[in-house]
Picture 1 (cartoon, rainbow, N blue to C red):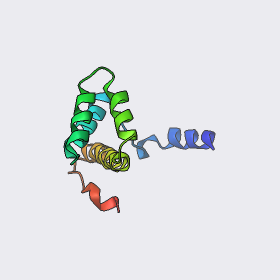
Picture 2: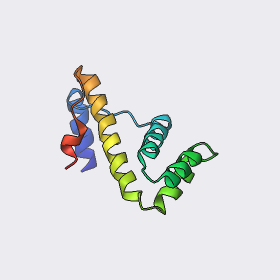
Picture 3: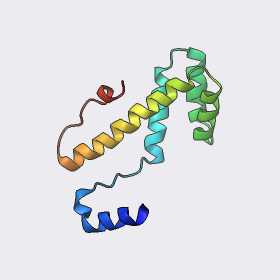
Picture 4: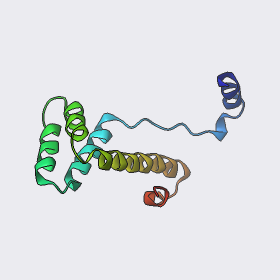
Length: 105
């Protein structure tokens, strides 16, 4: 339960790692990088255009949601999120980040 978890953390706090959140500028980078990988030139243009207008996150999500690339986006976002958190762990441990794709299968 929650109270037991809090007690465990307070007793052994050094055994835990607190992840930093993924900030909006990094999320924007994920969307931009994904858009550049889209093979459909029309969709790619629409996604890149959405990122240059006001409310880029909402516009990007709307376009992706109604495209055939929505699952591709979710897979890409998952990979980049794992990569971001692995980089945080690697930085904490002072090591290089392992290959993200190894865990995605």
